[in-house]
Length: 324
Image (cartoon, rainbow, N blue to C red; front, top):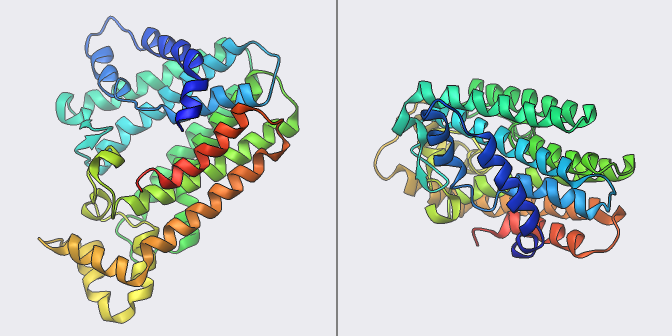
């Protein structure tokens, strides 16, 4: 991951300047709330993918278009985080107190809407209808994924196919769109555009699978949120699904009470961890994450050898090992 950050340093400085410029408003709470979350953005993985895709594909188009698309991607991601934290009742985001706990839910929702609007303004400025279409579609798919997850929350009978459908939509779709639009922004061949989309989709699934596993074993610092949040919210993820399946009838009453019934007591999280480690649910989830990471790396085979391609391959490894 560090190699990509170094390679993209100048590009990301330009992207960050765009982000700061476009989140300004005469309404003081808007830049204050947006800056609270954007300034804690860490490595900005999604816009990094947009820039890296443009560079790795070797396109000859104007890199400014890729910069604007990268800023759009970050605004879309930040807007979804603002909304998600309200839906989930999250207390931390990117290592900071969640914005809705400082400014209130109403302001967080409306600033999220503002950032969506700014994202689409930037897209239009690139004069790329295809990139606009990709990110517009991604925005609707993400919303669909969030609604699907909400309707199946606390459902101990959720099947793995539906779980994968949820994470493809709510997480992997933006990874795919970020990578795809980077290639589109510099005008490369359809094959290269498709390869970058496939890379982003597989990477996003790997990232979310690892994130779901890490919620049951990583530190809060590694996650940027409170470890154990998924269990505390009764959120059904793959480690939980596998644990429910593998512990069978012997622990069905525990899972029914804590997840479906929402009756979580002191010591329940420790018990859940014990069961998950005992049946290998966390290890199995990480194994699947590595499978998708390998798919992501394989998608890059069409690209010319370069430090950018190698850095993107390293990102796939980072996605599943960041909490190790």
